[in-house]
Length: 346
Image 1 (cartoon, rainbow, N blue to C red):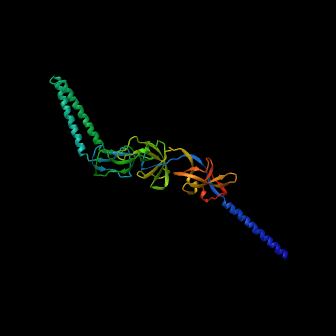
Image 2 (tube, rainbow, N blue to C red):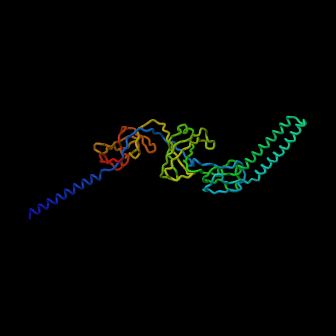
Image 3 (cartoon, helix red, strand yellow):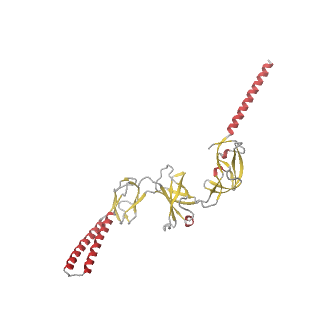
């Protein structure tokens, strides 16, 4: 009986011991966290230039009347698709038609005058100068008719190509001045741009090809990459700024002309400095923080204090505490402690 009890106790102790070992192994396995690494590198960090603007399509066309007057009829609506050569709108042509008739009457009179002077010149009843003057008057009258007919034609707006009416600016019955846009026509899928105004102290820092990050109010949690494609060489007298054109990548999102945009332009005009992603920092306090470096041999991390400088977008300048090329944890750092075992994913 005693031997049976003794064997039972030993068996129970073995089961408890094995259970504890399994729990210890399980706990150890659970402590191994998955992280991503990135080497500390040198970057050209500089304060970005902040500017705002409005999104527009690169293929937009502003359509306007050459002459001014009252809009008699608008034939299309905003958002409507149009074909090349389609009549979009026309002015009240009462005055324009009268000018055409007046020019034609003037041409008829100058033609009669020229014929009469030619006969007189043949009969030697007038001088060569009079003939030349009559000929010049006839030519001027022909030019006047051409101008009047040209203005008559451009008192109607025809679609120069197939596309879609993005915006109807003027309405039927309104008075409009010459060359004031009446429609904005989109001519198909194209790159979108943001025109931003830069102060003189900023325009000298940028160049064509500089990258920028664009934020749209329509997509508050989304960032869009852009690049400077044009820089104005003269100031815009209306705003007192120099306009720069940024071509934006749509990221598969639906973009519409008129979206409000804010741009952060990186000029790259700064000395290179050590930098790490902002998510690599833990326990940051003013100018100090910690990062976790990775030890390949032990497959663990070490907590290293560093001195930090300014923040530039998603990167932080490192003043001291770590050397270039050191592998540091970029994702998963907030869940680590010194000497933690980790599993690296690429």
